[in-house]
Length: 422
Image (tube, rainbow, N blue to C red; front, side, top):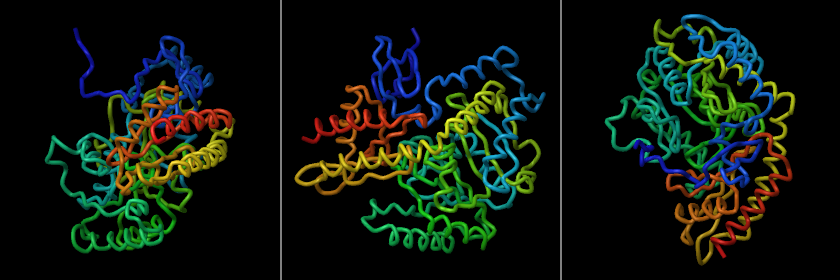
């Protein structure tokens, strides 16, 4: 009898039978408020009727049109539609299946276009689990351990994580940029550096937003040294943060954008976008793949864009995100660390919110975060943890979440925290 790998550990005990909107239903018919969205994937909610209809229609006509063999209309239409929402100047797209693959494609393009070997990433980053993407990942050692040596040519600079350092944001940002300059002076010379890879909000690293000064500092150094700025929008893109792209909060100006997760509402699809003049510097044969740009996934992505625009889901993410963060901060104020553990920080953007648990001494407290997450699950609120020690409980509801559902989630969260931190 075959079984799943024992290394695959479920965050919740739910055996899902179906999903609808913001809810997942188990085989007993119990509803669970899904504030994980499949790790930020079901942007339009579970089984949005328009996405389902588009996928069903496409399945009946063409499932797989391998896009270096034949072309298909959903891929062309999606490319045209993405051109309407991509950052200015990023007018060329390459499609693959997952965030890791897209990161690898962006890294390959950056190295081939510049002729330089090195990549600079930032502490707390998560860019994927494949060998190249894992080499760029610093959010936790579990993503890098046990299969080294990893890919060479990666340098790590600090991210302006003010809570981690115990500083204000200005001090943390000044430190991060100064240390980046030190990396360029001592580890990876500008002439050897192909790209900076950065998330507008650290995902697995603990839901830590960047800021305008930091991204402008990266842009200035990239321009000065001929380095490419790659923004990993796998988790932050497609309205998640209350703007279509996370970097828009900070006046970011990328050379390459990486997108996946919410792009197709649950179907495997990812992409990189760059100016045509940059994309054409990729070497012949360096871009391709059997399943990239799958016709059904592209049809679902087109429907996803329609739903996001017609139902004003970016605006909804902004408004519901304000309510969510305000409610989380109220709970945190009642459970600040003192003689015992508590919630030390609440942060995020839009519908990407994290509560960081710390010990009485202010150290990351993954054990307490895990207990609260489990208590929430028992009440029917599905959540995930993140952070290097698993100390952050994150909320990533679908962008269709309503004000009533945010209140429902916050009520269940308050009960779970009160049970664990009386």
